[in-house]
Length: 540
Ligand SMILES: [Zn+2]
Image (cartoon, rainbow, N blue to C red; front, side):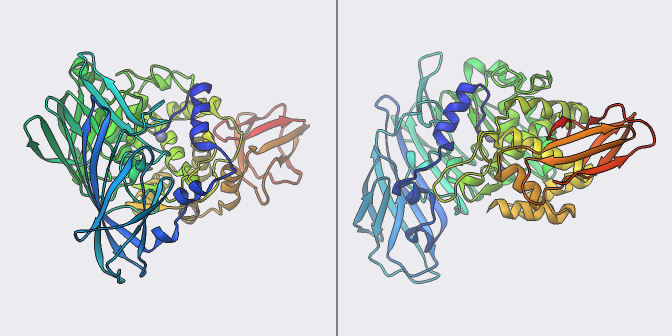
């Protein structure tokens, strides 16, 4: 998810994720593939949690099933203070563990042989970190609905899922499937990821058993507790019938029934651009929460007030941003870029946010036309700061600049111009979702794929927009029938062609770091640089 709009929110976002060093041992334990993580491959989580909203207390267990890749006896599990591990078990034996901050190292007794599948059960409890400003500074949001009933939700991108349940809290590995069972006081319902398999009545409480049949990243797992009311529909999509279910508070049911008409419109637009919804087996859900929203896989959470724009605002200043519900569209686009294609390291978070910010324009493109999309995406440049590179530092669980949203979106919009072939561009976007289906990836893999499919060497292009801060400056001078031009503020080998208009005709020019001259048939009184290219310009 992650959306910034105002400078204030933007700053908070940077504070929580974008900070640069110095990095601590805890940052490395959390952000790198430590030896105690590398030797075992995640298969399955069976997470069981009981939530007491009155006491703001949780307790439960996570059974971690894994395959042994290398013979080691020490296994790292993450769980954040103030939650504590009460007990760790394997095959009925209680195991010892040593804690280093939020990383816990379990001494396994049974020999771990390559290829074997084992389970370890971690029991835990406590008062979890309360969200300060969900979803940016997340944790548990303990709120109440209009009738005074508990309205509770988790959010943990960046912070990590270990803020509320024990797991291998690194993005490189995902389970193949997951069971989530949440016990709540009677009269309330839990909505989590995947499909609801069973509801158990325990007397004073009820247990909701959810099941995710697909790989899922840790921060995508969520619980949402409230007095929910449900409505839904069945969407006929590219892979058949997709259940689309909506859970909202009763007080918002009427408004939701109108606003969520955009959900099938979203599905139609994004299946067109990105290919089939990646989680047909798990269905798609929109779940109302007491914060803005987040891309929780197959249970996208929503708190945008049932109105268009970003909390009613147009982030582009063009009017087009009020044609859609920002949270519904943006967070749902993450099903393709974030949940289907997932970054391995948070430094590469642009893979989630650049494509998703760009998807806002593609939604407009599908329903309102190409011109609307271009105006919107160009309009969102007002949110770009060009303060630091989009890619952040690796192995310390930190992301790069917030420019990963709209600078990234404009980079992709610029790339579309370079291709000059919208069908090819669409086939690349769909191809990414096929090539990297349910996988975690690096920036390099995405770059290589786009370069290969487009037939353009985009090495310098991506270096410019992702790995350095300034944007290319096109300097030019007009003299009679000639123009002279060159780029400044560029990385080595940057030579992106750009379109200019001279006397009502569009021409490609091929600037580099060196001055070049182009001669026209008539006097060049003035030139117009195609605004679709995200560059700066200066007439000398
Ligand atoms: Zn996002």
